[in-house]
Image 1: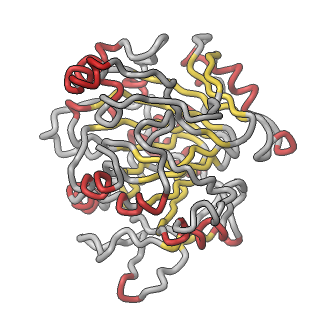
Image 2 (image 1 turned 45 degrees about the vertical axis):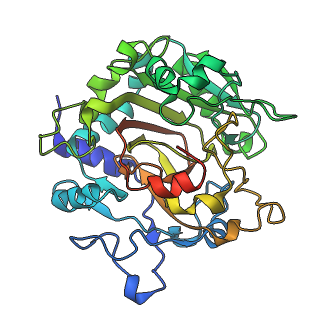
Image 3 (image 1 turned 180 degrees about the vertical axis):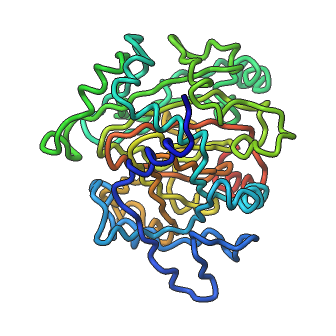
Length: 387
């Protein structure tokens, strides 16, 4: 039976460290991320020069820096005490983190209990990505669009909703010498776990890494978005169930009718998901382990050097953040960013088009759901060549 206090304690027991925000250097813009004002401060969230953040904590190193100090600009709200504050920031389409949601804590407790995950997923094979190193970049198989598709992009959009708004009408073409950055396969959870749950001597940026994925389709493509779809995710993550938007407690889904399923990604220690943006609102929950999120405002797009729409990895940065080539990307150091470490039980609200670069600090479970798009951040992305 569920026990809210027991679940809260289970979450607390999973937190092995406390992260300390580095003081904001401009007093007139300073705020306490653990006690943010009712209204967002000017220039929220504060952002630092990107090279300062990357040099302070190199992405290839999953070990936190001295005294666990991070360049954190995002507010952290307590679900029960700061709910109204969180709704204010969400209404203004600003990113933030929520902690202390009892329904999230109940899922965290289950997912970290004994062999619960093996029993939950049984022997069903799910999507798995393999990389010979620790870097993972989404890619779409190059396939030219027919002339009819390019003449009628709206028809293509209706027929292929998974391509969202950004790719229809484009000829996705592999550049010369391009190779697939990862290998896609399927395996059951216990096989992935055997690959992922290894000692540190078998880790490191140049060793193989595996990334596991579950999809609960829901209403997306009439529930047939993936072979072996995991519809039980809607029962496991009740806080991501689509509800009527008039419900006051529906903090995580702005437009439930536009939900695009529930997607879960399980990362092994050291896995890096390359910098990219998503063309919709995103709510992300960590249900076990820790993930470092490095975030950038959409207006930083020109400085982040993204692959264009026609590229198989469109929306992703060309820059290797682990080893920045300043000769090729001389404007990259002008970009601004901030970071936050999500621990078990944390929920991140990420507005449309916000950039995120993700580092798995240990073996972890993360799930996310999307709920429509907002227009606030479209102008800088259009100027950057998207939409």
